[in-house]
Image (cartoon, rainbow, N blue to C red; front, side, top):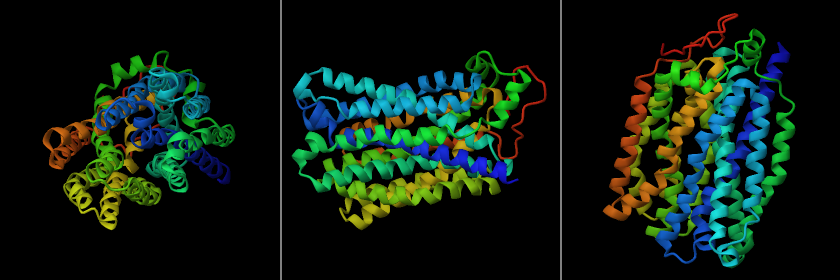
Length: 439
């Protein structure tokens, strides 16, 4: 008994460390895109246009993520989960390190933002393949009655990565002058990624392959073209995974990315107000996300998920009025409650999406459904929020946008079955395409 338990814990730890490093890299860019890149890479534009251009390069990664999900998902279903997870970590680590040594616009002109966008695209490829593999490895190891809890740990990588990235950038920002921070201070956390990636690799190389994938491989039942089979046999599962994620992403990036733009640009407050508020909420999520995953094992994926959807839809109308008070305690309250509602959605999300697909197609199906939604949700959310406020000069328009996106997520949950009690094991010796729970 101790062997499987130890291996399950090792897999969860490897997934958590790896995804934390990947999201650390990802959030470094997202935060720098609002604080540093407008001045460094788009100095010829006015502040609004520079911020918009910077956020647009940020969105490039979300376009790349589905492609990364397709490519790495294919090999994850064909070669194995473990090998792909090692590659995705290397892709993300190297691209983040290179961003740290990029020259600015003043040195190489228009080539600087072009190279920035290319490296952000590569980051997106790595993260696109990372999520599915980390979640599935955690899901497919261990006790089937704890799948929601186990699969929620890679989700903890999001707040962990945010805390690490924002914390380091905040330290750099506080301990040096604005000129030094803009000149070279912001580069240190990016360069640090090159060292941190070796920690993640060391941990990941010590884990074993998923037992469910090993069983499929032993049966000779691996799919030749996983994505093609997913499109043919799991169309409704894809639709559910896609829609169930959109509102979660829109709410999250409004609560964590647009808040920085709004507080510094519209309210004229120090950026530390936004960064510290989100930092506190993210720290709480380290415990709340696995708690939500555990609750989904007891009460079901959809009920817990829906509590978060409703909570976020209600809270978004209090979120901006609290920011408008310009009081840091109330701003922190706005961010903390917002991220509590996000944790309720994000905790069960991993198991919910992964369980929609059969084992032989799970990496491709889960990655595709999850990552395509990122384009419509996370990639566009800060940009749309910025444009809505600019057009209507009211945060009410932004709040309504978030609620509409959350309504789409509620629809995705409504058309899906409850996946908590599904048997994920493949039928023995079956080489036929496996149609998932929507058959």
